[in-house]
Length: 371
Image (cartoon, rainbow, N blue to C red; front, side):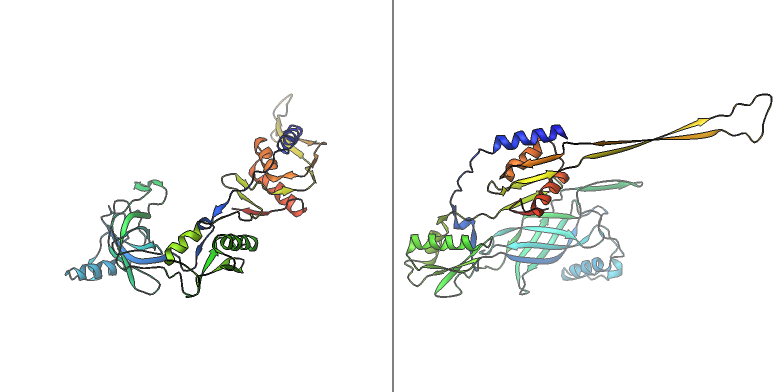
């Protein structure tokens, strides 16, 4: 513990004089979007064929009914009871339609099994229409699946990597109905929506637009919306929007600390500060050792039937306490503190506990997000 404290203190003192770098201006294009510019989710229901006995079992009635319907549309009339193949599987097909798409554009497709199939490796998705929230078909998906895993089973031996019941079709979807984003639902203006709502950043954006296009063009509606008037717009709307989204401003940063406990990653902005705080870590180590020894009875002059050996238990209790476990940190940035803890090889769980304790004590001026 003494070595850990010395390492932390030396690193905190070494990094304290470092000045914070000035923030660089960022384009509005990277801070948010225009209202009406949004992706559109698509979903469909399809069949994957060509599986090597790893598809849905014959007891899956949904698979049998879907295959019967598909064969019926191709002119083959069979009953659901006649479908007993394990080379097919029913799947859900999902995709994301861009805000603006033309007929014939290609989009990526995601496939997930909804039956009891063991693996979709080697399968091919039959033509599947993809519908939007309005129940209209916007794209068609078909093609060979790309599976990032496998599953092999023989004689109760199993080998599996990742999840073979999900896959993708890169460019496996074709747009069949064109879509276009409606950016100007209000004929008098448009609205810019911030990705991270912040009233200070919204005021900065409005000021930046007014400086480039004239005072009164932009006004703040809320912490996540800036209204931009188009009544005095010169030229086409697309040209006007292109000039606006390239306006660069310096957004206000929110003090946050993001900790990923699984990977041991700690991300903190350089502006996150800590006040003077005293940390007491009473490191008490208790170790208990139990030794069992057998003592065999010695008989002199003959044999004794009821004589037995004796088991002796010896218990040893050791207590070690670090008397130098009180530590005072001067006011500095949390980045220096975390870097010092990382170099001292402090476990992530201990680091989280220290940061949360400092937050509860009012010495850490940031929000902690644990993933």
